[in-house]
Length: 442
Image (cartoon, rainbow, N blue to C red):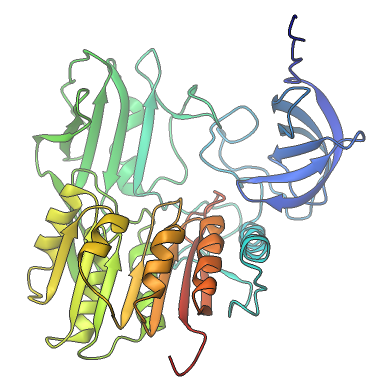
C-alpha cells in the first residue's frame, strides 16, 4: 500500500483578518476555509496578506508572515531596524508596534495564559493588567532601547556575524543590532571576520566596565587572535565537553544589584536588561517582606542575587539555603555570599537536592525556574513547607500559570502579580507572583 504524499503549503498566500495576539510573538488568523494561521509581523485587527512559512495540508495550524498590510492598525509603526521583517532576523517580534502597544500585547498574553491554564482572572491574581516598562525605556517615538547586554552572534559560512532567522539555522548578516547595549556595540563584533567560528557571544556587564567575548569554534576550528575595539576578556567553548575555558583576561564579569557586587563567571546567567536584576530583586523583597530571624529558600539561585538580598534582610539570626544546578554558578554564589555565614549554597537539580535537605518547614521561598517552570512535583513539595510567602519569578507566562495551578491544588493563592517589560521589541516578559496560604490561620 502506497503512502499518499503530503502536500506542503509553504509559499501559499491568504488574505486574512488578524485576530488576537498569541503567546510566542504572533497573532491568530483564520482563512476563509477555517484553517488556523499563526501570523508574525501582524497586529490584532489588521487585514493582511499572509504567506505560509511552515505547514502542510495535514497540519493542525500553519505558520505565516504578514507580507502585505492592507488595513494597518493604529498601533503600527515602520520597523526601525532594517533587519526586522518577514524572512529576516528572528530576534525581535514587535519592531512594528508602538512601545505602549507592545506592552498591551504582552499583558493580553499573560491574562490569556492565566485564565486558560490557572483559571485566574487578573483581579484574582492581584494584577492590574499592566506591564511596566523598565526604568530608562520610556524613549521618544522611533527610538529603540539599547538594553541587551548579552548578544550571541551566529557566524555564517563566510565568517560574517549575524543573528538567526526565525525558527531557522540560517544567518541574517547584520552590521548593527539596534537593541544591543552600547557596551556590546562598542566591541565591533560585526566588523571583523570570524572564520572557523560557529558563534560569538558578547557580554557587556552593566554593573562594571567588564567586557567579555565567548568563542565557540567549528569542529577543528582554530581560535582567532581577538583584537576588538575595546579591552575584553576572551573565553572559549570546548567542542568536546561543552565547557567554557578562559583564553585571556578574567573568567568572570562583575555585576551590581542591591548595592552589592556579584561575580558571574564563564558566561553564566545574569539578567540581560541592565535594570532587570535590581527591578526583580526589589519586586521580590517588597512581596516577601523578609523579617529578622526568618529562614528562606532560594531555588534556581544562580549566582545568588535573591539569596543575598534575603540574607541581608533576615540578619544574623536568619538563614538562607540556595540550590543551583550549575557548578560554576554555585562557585560564584558561594564567593558572592561569603560574607553571610548563615547562607548555604547546594549544587544539583532542585527536585533532587531539596528532598535530601531534610527541611520540613521554612518561612520564605523564592524560585526563579528556567523557561519550562518548576513542575508539579517541585511545586507540591514547596507547598508542603508552610512558607508564609512565596515569590515566583517567571520568564514564561504559560509555565507560570501552570505552576500557579499546582500551587492552588495545595492551598496557595496568588496575593499579587507584577509584570515587567524587560525585553522590549520581543515577545518575552518577566513576571513576579507573590503567593500565600489561602487559609489565613495556616
